[in-house]
Image 1 (cartoon, rainbow, N blue to C red):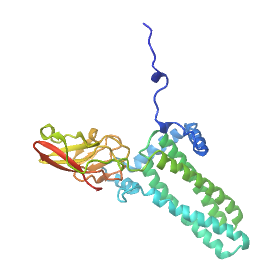
Image 2 (image 1 turned 180 degrees about the vertical axis):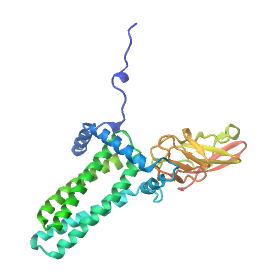
Image 3 (image 1 turned 120 degrees about the vertical axis):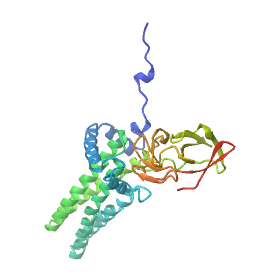
Image 4 (image 1 turned 180 degrees about the horizontal axis):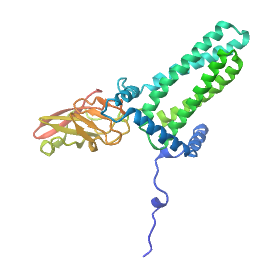
Length: 317
């Protein structure tokens, strides 16, 4: 008997995110460049391993630092908000340095120097918050994030060197370096935009889920096993139920972080943990207990009528 090879065995299925975009040109060339840089994977694994040692594991005291940097307290990632500080400071410093070329005013030079160092200092905090969001990615998204970080890191090194040259009185050389750094920063921002908008890293994966405003019967109460996570369909929204004592709680079954199936996770002390990255949510109200998720889960009001568990969606937590 001759073995037959299927087309999927010859060309295994890949996600669209694993293939370079075809247009526009800047996206295509950037995607092809990243795809041709497998060495980034080695860098990412080293950085990821070191970062995970610093942050520790979910449900440990050291992980609270990661929760803070990721933005659990903020309600969405801190990184996009924090990066405006170095970007604004570096932009202003560059403009002032260009203005200084015309008359070499000492006051303008001093202002430019102050803004340069504000940008340099705040870039460190921006990097820390970015790493906290990046560490839970994988595949091409992780590789793209490493390139984003390397570009920004190179920009920071150039800007620090530029600041030191300015202090030494070599302002024209400093301007050349800071201009190069600014160009790297702009391209790094483009790569960051690919992560956020094209690959949906850091977005709420359940924001678009709708659902019925009326109660919908989803399962017979007798079919619920106490303490066991159960997946149901609530008018098109996958929901996960838990019966804990006499109380039944329900939240959306799709993790807001990267769409992991919460019903396949674990349940402990009122909290469900995603099987993919261990994001924790309270089953009673959908609030985030620990990162990498930063968005609360959609929740449902629960009632039992005629032996059937009925759900209807609530507004945002």
